Length: 476
Image (tube, rainbow, N blue to C red; front, side, top):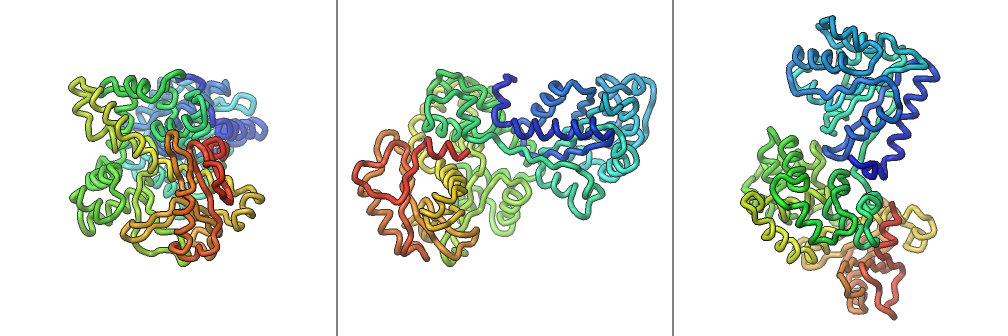
């Protein structure tokens, strides 16, 4: 993978290097616990770190197999690694994880430490419930006092959190926990060499924070050129990445898969999701809980106001790429399979403007919330630090931006409107509509007015603050 894909990963690389440096200084073990959603580049990041560090290492890709087979696979991997103890694994059989991990530390010294990586660790615990206790035993008895950097990586975020929770044998053992987030819009802008901030945000709405997909955007390509290459057939990375995510995340959660397909199509209300997915009652409630709490692929939002709304929840797919794929690609994979990508691309181009106007809203809200860390800006907009949105139960009135003082606000500082048109600026009529909504949003009667536009705010339109693409991108 090109080095460009490591834009935006400097802090994570530095954190890994700091742990290895600590091992070299003290001669004791360090334990990194790394989690993040699938396909965000965790494995590639750790591999790149191993290569750059020039330390002896063993990179073990855990299989979803029973104890004996998984352990045998680790022994074989260690035998072909660069560990000082690699040769000993060629002639010895190990019947327990503690014994095998203890052997991996042999020969390591403070000046020549060992890096042991266990990737996709949750796969081991699925079929071997005792693995966490075995790993704890190996750490407590050997690795903690050895010049070893142990790096455990997992894509099942909820399971990775539970495995170091209070009730787990591994609680308190990691010396560093790292969450590898998807790449930011600014990182995607750099990787894709976007010609401007507006184009960068548009590209982020398509490839999301996935390094492999961002790196696949040709430097001089526009939207259609990219799509024609990215969707040339049903086996391109852009076509298959979402399929692999869905297959791995929902292997045993078929109802949740149907529900996220409905949400990805654009259904945000509970009743509409129920109608489109065919999943009803408690089954739908459970499926949504899986998507929101366990998989963290869907966000549930309530109207943001004073007092906060308690009903009319909206459900949206969090990841921009997955949302785009579920809307435009997934339902039409058959067309790619039969050699008609032109139908898929044309459909995207026709629907892009309308889709983009909605898809950009959560990106804008996060960007404005980040910008509010600037005390001067926050003070100018009522001293608030959080951004949500508000809507009537029947969706007859919606306000894109609502700035408040807390996740459940007691005070509203501003309301705002997003106009993400290709060439049409934020106009006086848009401002009049926004001003009229101050009396509709509970608690916003004195709120300041904010405009966000992809192009510009028309001359003569007075706002308390205005943001364009460059302002938003600078938030990252």
